[in-house]
Length: 464
Image 1 (tube, one colour):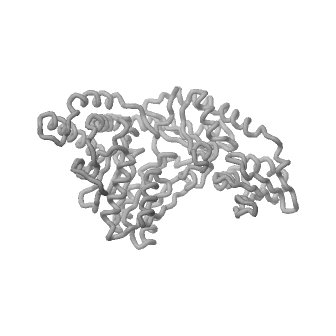
Image 2: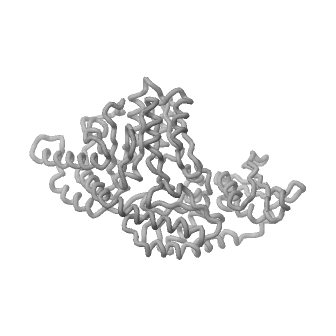
Image 3: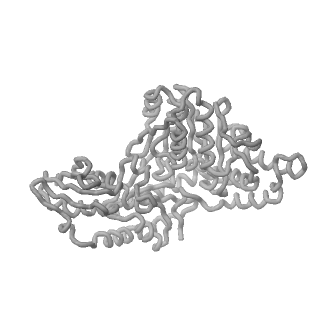
């Protein structure tokens, strides 16, 4: 079954497998020891560091190997904040950062620091000027965190321009490069960078953290002497060697593969709205990673759609509230203000043949139609709608995405042009999906306000 979830993780690259197995024989010893076996392991570790540093575009002594990409982010953020504590305790992160960054921001708040989010546009892009304004509005900042490219919708961030805004104000920039590092080096004068090997076909359990020389950085305790005091614990030399070798290998063919996959993603972006009605393709159409495309479908339960596509032979991911485990939409989709229901992220692994993409496009319409039929085949909404001189009020309290929008769609035709429909809903996804439905169907969203019996009353005016 094709796995179209490369943005989550990739299978082990053949070069990584070979390097790992070879390093098991020579890299098992403690690289901190001076005996022959230790020196051999140290040579492998140093060579891997040089290889990874060349791919990243930094000095080898600026690069630290960590137990994961999340560990690299947490270490980088907290270390930079500690190093600049006398300057500022204010952390700025974009609203679409990976949850690892948001968790670090939460920890900083709990420790008495200040953390704020920088908004994005509907494509998920951070405006460089908005970063400068956010720094100035708070009288400076200790650190700014912006990803190189978004993990859910693929939008690339203008890192070089953002780095210039930060440098002009003397504020370091940390870049989460997990999604893009397998494709290219991150441009610009960034200060810190984090990556994760399993995103480019290296083994899981290996991350990297880069801290530029001259940056104020104070690793958080407890510490030891390994990895310059920035990542304590015994180094997994075979895994590190495999990670560095696979990064070099994927980079060697990245340009050609990026062009090939970008053409397949263009095909998906064009064909999904043509073949499936009521679909919104989200993310930047041009400034994006070559392998990721995300779309959301009206009147579709995201979890049911993922299961339907799985039965058809495709593994994909979703940011819909109904598959998140928290019953709230993805924070990325929420920050973008786009449709969240029926959300599907397709992320193509290297080597994906065109035939598999065409087969996915062939099965998608029936999968969506099947899920929609199951959700719309429920008792008539009229039993739950109240009509008065002001229009129609639909009680969708207690109903989860996508049912509030389905209820709205059913009754909008019952009011005259210029009339209003009020939807009572307590599902957090409704805050995104009702305005998105209005935009897709040419109706006007009038806003929402707390309802007397709980939830929110969302008002929609019929325009056609």
